[in-house]
Amino acid sequence: MAAQRPRQEVSAWRPRIPGVVEVFHAHFTEYAYPMHVHEAWTLLIVDDGAVRYDLDRHEHGTPHDTVTLLPPHVPHNGSPATPHGFRKRVLYLDGTHLRDDLIGAAVDRPDLRDPVLRRRVGQLHTALAHAGDELEAESRLTFIGERLRSQLRPSVSADTPRSDPALARRLRELLDERVVDGLTLDEAAGLVHAHPAHLVRAFSTAYGIAPHQYLNSRRVDRARRLLLDGRSPGEVATATGFFDQSHLTRHFRKLVGVTPGRYAKNV
Image (cartoon, rainbow, N blue to C red; front, side, top):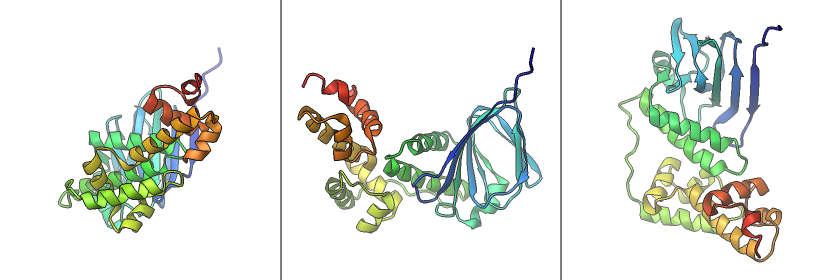
C-alpha cells in the first residue's frame, strides 16, 4: 500500500484593499517553514490543527482560538503541532494600520486570546474572498487594526462609540448618491473629513446597520425592481453596482431568501 503523500493546499491573492499586501490560505500536513522574515506584518488564524513556531528564540503555539500577530523583520519559523497538520488563513499587512513602534510589543506577546478579534479576522477573510465586497473588507480591517493596537498598547484604548448623527447623515447621502458606482472607505472618509473608524461607528450607531450593509440593501432593492421589469440577472447585476451575477446572487439571497432567478420566475 502506497504511503499517503503530504497534503499541501495553497491559495494566495492580492485584494484591492489598502493595507493588505497579500491574502494566503494554506493546508499543510508535514511541511515546516525554516527561519525567515517578512517585510509585512503577519496576521494568522488557524482553523484546524495547530502550529508551533519560534520567534525571538522563544517557542510559541497557535491553537484555533488564538490570533497570532508576527511583526515584520523578526525571524520566525513554523511547523505542524498535530499529526494531521494545520489549516491556516493569513493576512500580510503593511504599516497602514500597524506602525513599526509596535514591533517590540508584538515580539513580547504575539499570540492574542481575543474571541472578538478572532471572529473579526475570520469575517474579514470571508469578505476578502468575494470581489465586490471591498467596502465591507475595508471597514472590518479598520476595526481589526484598532483592536490590535489596543491589545499591544493597552493604555491606548479604542474609541468608545459616540453619536454623530450629522456625520452619519452625510455618509448616508453619499452612499445614496453612489449606489451603483460605490466608493471605498478611505474615499468616503476623505469626502466627509472623518477618521474611517469613527465614520463607520457613527453610521452604525445612528442607523443600526454598517455602511456596506446599507449599500448592499439599496442595491438589492433596485435589483428587485429591475427583475420585476423583466431584466435578466446578469443585466441587473451590472445595472445595480454588483461586481457580477454571483455577487448579486449572494447578497440577494441573503436579503430576500431566494436567488434573483427564482424571484423573477413568476414575472
